[in-house]
Structure formats: structure tokens, C-alpha cells
Image (cartoon, rainbow, N blue to C red; front, side):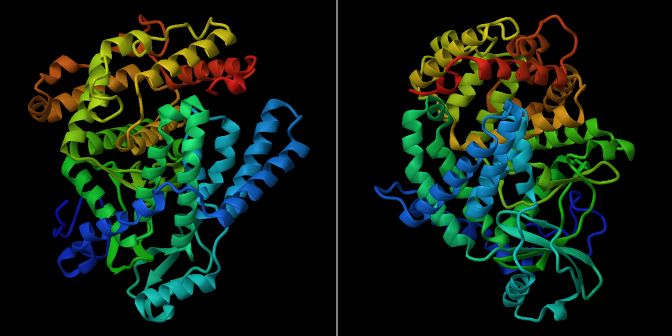
Length: 533
């Protein structure tokens, strides 16, 4: 994206105290070069080796093994929920001991609400911003080294306790000598070396897991680790994060949205390891009760997040790539503040076209069109017989009724479908990983903040919005009349196993169905081995 030279963007708040003039900021102009330099580290970190870093692997094995052993002694034989909660806490604490890379994985787990067990998500949620902090002496040393001045020469106030501490860095509130209130993000020590060692371990172990566990073949674990590597190496350079903030703000400004905002980076106070930005405040994203009590329309909140994600990805090719409650605030006026832009998804023109095809085909219930879009993204080999795939894999409707099927039937059907997808060469492509992770989070957010939202009406609105706003672009890219890709409620209801004649579909209904199916599967004989080869 071209450098921004205008002083104001609508996605920044109106009280920003500094101008956005990048022409005098060398790091902003060097953004593409910085990104290429960061990505040059990925092949070395993800190259498969015959032997992993033994010392780091042994430590990880001992720490995780000790965590599981303590669970086996204390909680394993208790009721199912208590046992899962105990194991989740033990593994989470082990991740904290193992450091930044594992903490980042824990954050991903914490964003999978509704897809992973509730006990697991709850336990790992503290890793979003409540990881043990580095000492203030370290913070002072990093800031003073970055700017070549004493802390007191730059800030009239600087909190010694962080407001948030996560995998890569921690954030302190401060006040500039000129009076502006800011947030200062400071990187943890030795993080680059630790991340590289952990990536080597993950690259080594991924193929072994993919061979033993069928589901991992579809998940495409090696590709996910490669995406993880590509994103985390960019997170280690805060100059790239500041550039991402400007790029996301520019997209939001272009679309004309005023419901999502981005903190303004202080361009003269950005280095590789320190980022000074505007301080924003608001409700925690998962505190729906407080929002409702303050009169915030939580339905409008999730709608803003959903539309901005879709629009950023499929129309502009730039979107926040790490949505979770620790990276979001909801301001008193209902605007959503996007924080922590270390991971930003970027799609080229071809990828955007395929994403757009998937989106519109999904709205219209065109299952073959969905497959064609995913095939264009690399999820299926070029020669795949899509009609045969549709005949074997139930995309349009469940092949068994989840509400009436017995546990063994559900497990058998899951195994059959998994084998069929593997046989057709299905792999989740790298470009889809970040987007799907965000979609999972938005899905969970809708379930929490707007559990009775009529999804049929919502998707009808979004479909009409894209057709009216981007109709010409859609026609040019896909060669179709966007009016022909209007939302089909019956197709969605059938796809999720609901009565196709009902007039509404809510997240509460979907969550109840998921919980019922999960419990059935968990109670099925040999359920733990259902995805073994």
C-alpha cells in the first residue's frame, strides 16, 4: 500500500495529537524492505531437519510432561468438566514457562470459543494479556536504548506496572513531555532466539503428527506452522506493526466506516523494539454485560467487526489477522478499537477474487462455486473432480441428522468424511489460515454478544450491502451479476442441519446443537481414536 501523507484518517480518533506525515519518517518508507528482510528468516527457521534443537525439545518435553503428570495425579479421575479444566490449566501454565512461541499458540487456542472445549478456552484466555511481565528495569533499558535518551527526558509519567503483558511484549501507559497520553509497547528480551528455536521444533514434529492423525492432514499442519512463522517474525519488528496500523486505517477510511478505529502511532517514536501510540480506552470485548449496562448496542458491535473483516479481506486484501478479546476494546460510543497489529493478513488480487467467489457462492448456496473458489486458493488440487467431491463430502447438508443420530453413527460419519477429504487432497491453504482464525473468533463473538441475533436477516443485509456497494467490481472480477448471488436462507439452514422452513437462525441455536453433538462424540466408544490413521 502506498505511504499515507494525509494528516487525518477517519479510522483514527479525532483527538490524535500528531500528524500522519510519513514523508519524514524513514522506517515508514522502508516498510516493504523491512517486511522482505523479516520474511528472509522464515526458510531457515522452518526448514525440516533430521534432528531438532535437542536442548529446547527436551525442556519442552519435560515441562509439558510434568504438567500432564500433575494432572494425572490430581484431576484425571474427577468428573469430565473438572478433569478437562485441570488439564487445561496445567498445560497453560506449562506454555507460560516455555515462553513466547507457546504463549502465542495459547492465544490462538483462546480464540476458538465454540469450537474447542469451554474449559480449554477459558484457561488459555489469560494468555491474551495477563502473562507474567518483565521487570521495569528491563523496560527502562529497552526504551532508553531505542531512543538514546533517559526515560525522564521523554515522558513526564511512565507507569512501572504494565497494563497488559502478552507473548511478544508488554504495554505501559505513559504521558509525553508535551502532555499527550500514550501507550508504550516494549518487546521482551531474547525473544528472537527463542522463537527461532521453537519454530525448528514445531517444523520437526509437524510431519510426524500429520502421519499419525488424519485430521492433521486436512488441517495441513506444516502449512499452518509456516504461516505462524511468517507472522511471528514480522511481529518482532514494531516498525512493521506501525505500518500495519496505518494500512488497516487506510482501508477503513476508504470504505467509509466510522464504527471501527485504530490507535494512531507516534511516527517519531517507533523503533524495532518500542512502539509509542495513542492511548485508547473502552470496555473489554468479552464484557458484554458492561456494554449493555452502558447502552452500547452489542449487535452493532459484532456487525461492525464482521463487515470490516469481510470487506478488508475480499475487497482490499488487508485485514487485522489476530482478532481475540485481548486485542479489542469497545468505546463508550460503540466504536470497536482494533489493538495490536503485529499480525495483518494480506491478499493479492487473485486471492481476493477467489475469496470473493467463496463469499458470494456461500451466500447463494452455490456449493460448487464455493469449492471452485477454494480450489483457486489451493485448498484442492487443480484436477480434482468437484462433483465427485460434493457427492462424498456433505457441504450442502449433513449426511446424518446430528439431532437424532447415535454417537457411533456420528463418529463413523466423521471418519468417513475425513477419509474422503484426504483422498481428494484437501488442504487448508496458508492464505486461508489467518482469515479462518478471525472468522472463528467473530463466530464466537456473535454467540457471546448477540446470542439471539437473527443470522438469516444479518446475512441478507451483508449480501445486499456487498452487491450494492461493490456490484461493478464483482461483475468485473467474477463476470457475474451480483444480484444473482443473493443470500439463500434455506441453503444455510439446510447446511447446518436445521429446518429449512424456519424464519430465523440464532447463534444460541447453533451453539446448542454443537454442544449436543460434541457431548455425543465425547461419549462414543473409542472416540479418542477416531482420527487416528
